[in-house]
Image 1 (spheres, rainbow, N blue to C red):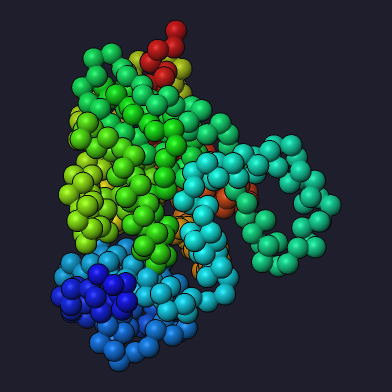
Image 2 (cartoon, protein in one colour):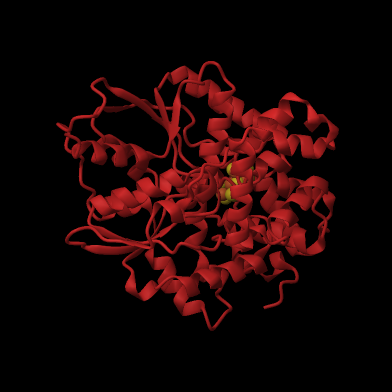
Length: 440
Ligand code: SF4
Ligand code: SF4
């Protein structure tokens, strides 16, 4: 099917689902911030329908509203009519890209991150990661910042430099063998190591492999993996997202696997939708359906196979209760509807005491590239999250998505109330508990 008029090409019933009840409005962070109807889910759906009906042009105002939307999908969870906001949103952003009306910095960034090869070439991405790691590790970044050389850069680049995340080598392929097999394996699973996760949080991937092994899963981890394409689809680059989906379908031996496991809420949400993405591709459609049925978030998979509780008598675990606040990744909670399982996993860890976090289901402001495209709103959402985290006083904050880990970590390191608090993925705590079992 032609990519023209993406909103028009949708099944019209998807556009008609909204019954304008407004029950989604209190859950929408951008409506909460503005109280403008056009910045609410209901308002955006109305705009999309007007575009589909040919009553509204896709101009800068429409593009701005789609860019302002976090894509957090809280509205989808709240909606009693089952509105498929994710599909509408992807089509709307795709239409904005197709018409070339996405504004300034956002457009350049999206193009850079997608069209300009980086997230399509894993070797190039890792090479850049290695360079960044050296830049940080050798102290060049610190020196440049101290000498104020950064101030010579254009303002946009200054801001980008200040947001450079800490790269943490070694990366996943250096920590995890292509195939790791436990004694008496009961399942065979592939581990998706991700892009951001690989460069910044490869330790989470190692911890994921460890908990899978401890639960009788043989772990297959291709050393060079393609981006899942969520960043591309989320930003309207649907053809690139399809290309990446096909590459992943070619890479993994789907028929030989019991599951394809992701530990990143955002990636997992997209990986489960390859069949939808490729529904017009006769060569890949069937394989994509088989793939979707096997993709699981790590928490979901562990609970499904009956995750083993670590032995509480193990030495090496903290003697004191460890207070943990869980903050839900939007795409894990609202996109994948994986709500209970991360809490179940955390409850298994000896000495962990869960502390309820107000608005744990509210976006932290990470939302893909939202920190770059909408820095002010992203910062407001982060500040709101940090206030709640400071209020609960937990020793650890756990969340299941690298973008959220990065956003929280960045905010907490700068906040004296939270600088001492550990940020981690739930599986890291479980992996540590398993590791403690074998200590003498
Ligand atoms: S995806 Fe999030 S920000 Fe966008 S309309 Fe829905 S609730 Fe609001
Ligand atoms: S809750 Fe659902 S049906 Fe009601 S206004 Fe929001 S999107 Fe429309």
